[in-house]
Amino acid sequence: MSDSRVLSNQNYCFELKRLGIALAVAGVLLATLPARAQDTPPPAAPPPSSSTGLSGYMDFHYNKTRQEDGQLDFHRFVLLVTHQFSDRIRFVSELELENAFVEGLEEAGELELEQAYLDFLLSRSFNLRAGMLLMPVGIINERHEPPVYYGVERPLVETVIIPTTWFEVGVGAHGEVGRGWRYRAFLTAPLNAAEFSAEEGLRNGRQKGSRTNIGRAAATGRLEYVGIRGLTAGASLWAGASGFEFRPRFDVPVRIYEADVRYSRDRFEGRAQLAHVTIAGAGDLNDAIFRNTGVSPNVARALRGGYLEASYRVISGARYGDVGVFARHEKVDTQFRMPSGYLPLEEFDRDLWTFGATYWPEPDIALKVDYVHQRNRSAIIRAPSSFNIGLGWWF
Amino acid sequence: MRILLLVCALAAVSASARSLMAEQADQTEQTAQAQPAPAEQTVEIAAERFSFTPSEVKTRVGTKLTIRLTSDDTAHGFRILGTHVNIEIPKRGRGVTTVSFTPEAAGRYTFECSKLCGAGHGFMRGVIVAEDAVKGEQ
Picture 1: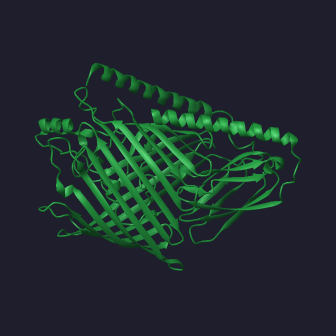
Picture 2: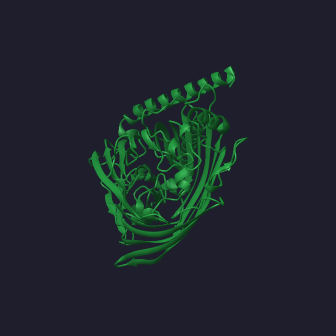
Picture 3: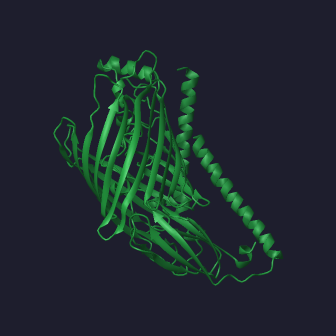
């Protein structure tokens, strides 16, 4: 990288930091103005506005992968704690215990702080948020309570292409204009390219807010339309320089382009999503990791995934609950385009059919069952199909 | 960076457009004849994780606004900031809840979900725009 390019990136980084600090300071100052300045006119008789809330969700799974023993896993135990300081300032947190058990230095469960932010609510069209943020990318990442999606496990696209649940520390703005146009724009810590892999895509690159490198902040934006009942259509862009472990030798700029739509009417619901990732410098990344470890991660220069899902509530409004059935087809290729000199590992060019049903004895409890038929392009390594049962609830 | 600048620019343009529209409406008001506000208006709002539809409701000062609220999933809350309106919306299939609100002054009344409903609970906001009767006729 030339000196001028390095200098340009440093200036860019400095500007991002300065803008982030300015946004945060402006938010705090504006949020502490008297409530009279807000959209709502002076209240006649305002109720007490300070309150604390507790909620959560849980997810308990049985997974039986072909030619393996079945596995029981208390997959997620999540508590949400919120506090409203005033009508203008509130705190939201989400603490997750994954796989029931956390043990130091061994691969077991995880204790994750998925959200912990302050919202400074300035107006309907412009608000500021700072802390641990969910990345506004995709369908599931910001809307992941078990009763709201079909399937025991989340779609593979939203696991390896979009590394759901994806959260990072940062600051940004959000708001809504007109009848249902929403936006989010955040500056956060970037992904760590040193943890990318052929099989898991971007997933292990999440820094998760733990002593994150913020040398060059990543930018995320999402525009979304929710103006028609049952319809959510959105597009997201994420851009970050993820090669901080390799600078100044080289960098790894990553871009994620994503579009999705979700529509429900009466008993029907349909979903579609397409996500495309570009990783510039993937060849340098593979070479550098190979020199350090002796193994190349075979990271692609482009990853692509998408899915279509259709569902129908065959029983709705019955005294004993609702029943819905669904089918989903996914194509996920974490080796979509390879850097020069690297060949794709064909077992990671996958397509999946998932068929299943959900029974809601009441709207916040979901008993799920599904079968996942997975195929790949490899003639040697077979993709494992699986049978799954899940019990999830929200309170 | 560009995205953030774009967002800031959009917010600024939106604010400018709103103030411009308000000015135009004020000018029109001087020449228009006063019209009485309708006595009642009913609107249906559907809640789901994490939006209200519609999220913007227009009414007139002095009109009794009857809001019929339903949920497409879990229980939500409906609170109009700065007022006593704060009610729980029953879960999907559990019926409709109704609340009345009569704006006594022109302005934008923010409403929000007041019952923690999930990871994106904070995005569930909307606004009731109360206009003077004269403006509403234009």
